[in-house]
Image (cartoon, rainbow, N blue to C red; front, top):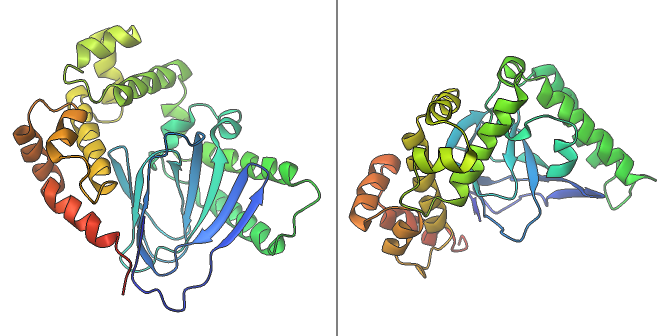
Length: 290
């Protein structure tokens, strides 16, 4: 779902496909873009480079801002929200998850801008991507598109690996992988109202104290992270269902809340808007601009 500020004189998106790698320039005239969850889609990452205005991003409860010249890595097969006060023009590179994971340890630890980007590497990769799209526009492909795609993925891995602060945080690969198993378990069981430290530690086969320690690395508590993820999942369901085919009470139960009233209070405190207001806003934004 995309929301436009001005549909006039907006250039057509520039797209290039290199084997399994996709490069797209888009967003001129947009102020918000919602990337829906596609259960049937292949696992992938979106590497997003804003071109003009600062861009806010939100995925899985993690939020931040990236300015022109920077980038943010997001899970392309999961919901995320991009917004800008004026112009959401951006380059987006779609990278198959396996291609990046083969070159970079603990890729998901870099999602949503956890570490500071290396500006020189970011500028170099952005120039490579934009030059590639310009040279091979109009369906003119290089002789070996997969080989060029592999080089771009390799440069992306180098850029992400050069992020400031990631070396010390990812020095223990085992801890990073265990933390990812925790996140995966939470994602898969958000609808279980009994989800908590005991069930997670048993499922992942770690102690409660180790669970608390790993979550504390991201300045998170176990209960706080679960609550944030449940609320974000509810937000995604409401945004994705502007016509209200699923009742708000059912959204509450599907995201692990024991009562609709508790859900509504928690949601309103977190987003400063009621679930009904969010759904009504999504219905308005999904209508074509006049």
